[in-house]
Image 1 (spheres, one colour):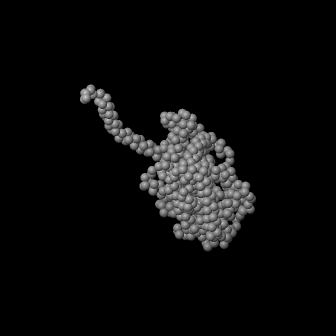
Image 2: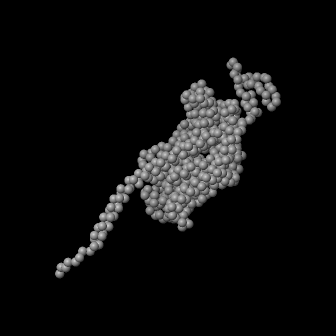
Image 3: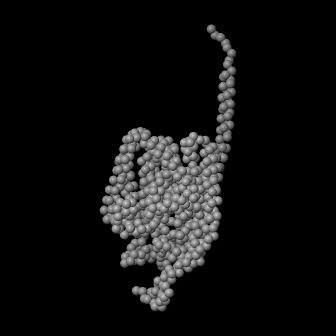
Length: 593
């Protein structure tokens, strides 16, 4: 039986609700373009301000260091010979090659004088371009001769201003690295402030200008910044290629300008090896970085007339061993935790043995013994036996190659850098251990980027790289004081990144059960600003007093000695001028053969 009933009003209500929801969606879609536009404008504004601050802080640091150098020596008022004497120890040796290239009648004669040098070592003719990293002096001398600047700037000023200009690049690269890690340029500003206020422990460029590290470290900082950006996921192909080019150029220039390049890059290779073994970095990107290291070092080897010490370096043997081992052990990243751990230990043992084997084979083929003193030095330094090698004992006597003094940490703590560094390091190490354990515990293959991103969400690849980097270079600085400048500058970057990182504060607030998005925003901006205010209030007066303190270079005995041995040409003979030495006067002229 058919019956008719009254319609329910629910349908009309549902229709009206659906219609209302549709209207709201339409309104939301209308609002989205404007919000996206506002966000894009805000990013452009932030990038512009941050970039301008980066350039300004870099230039100000360069001017600050140059002013300290001028005030300490009165460099603009002293004689040319006094300026050259102020380049102490090996600094003066490096500058002399720059001067030699400028004084040569032609560039080709200057090159020939460096390739067939019989002045540096007694009774021997050596190739300076092969034995020493002096291509920067060669390049600078060519620039000075080619550019129309001889009337406006003296050669010595062109030399030192180039190095102070590199310091501007150095600080800017540190600023950018911290900005890339944290996502805010406030982090970069804090890193730059810490670099300046800890100047005693972050740089010594103002009194050892020509040292190789002052040429190399700016390029090393650029390389770290480029690697940090390269390890970001989902890069556009063009961005990735340009970043690889930046990594290659900076790696090549770093290797060309410092004699310790192979050891520093070996530390970097160890960083990549550790993170790749623990599935914290994409395998393809790690392969690219290994290849760039090999290519850059081999190119330097060619420019240094096939320097055998480079060919026999541990870096080349290690990188080749890692690449070979990865091809042979393709299923290393499968299985449960114990299987993965066993395969990882086997992989480590295989790479170590293959590295030593390849290194010994290369050294035997090349009959290489030039770097034996380094290993003898390390053996004696860490108590594995005494050595009678002269070069090794010379390094052991040098204070710069001793352990890092404890008062270094007191100075770093005075600026709050050390406390902030330990705070950030502790949190990131905990996160890294958790991620590593989770990666090793997974039985599935984690080669895909999607899965990789999922498991490193607590620790981004670029953060993981900088974490292991700062740990390894920290151990290097603790063991060898001269290498502290590699660590302390990166310490500024890492500490400032952590204080401005939302991920670090999120992890900390979750651990203490106080997580709130607003609290994260407050902490990541308020803490750095308070530290910046503290640094300004405490160190600004001292920096102004330092800039107002005027001193003068004074070493009359050495100046007289240098004038006395200065050769003077009379006709076809060279003579040595007699001068007052130690209260005695010599009026004789001695003929030089």
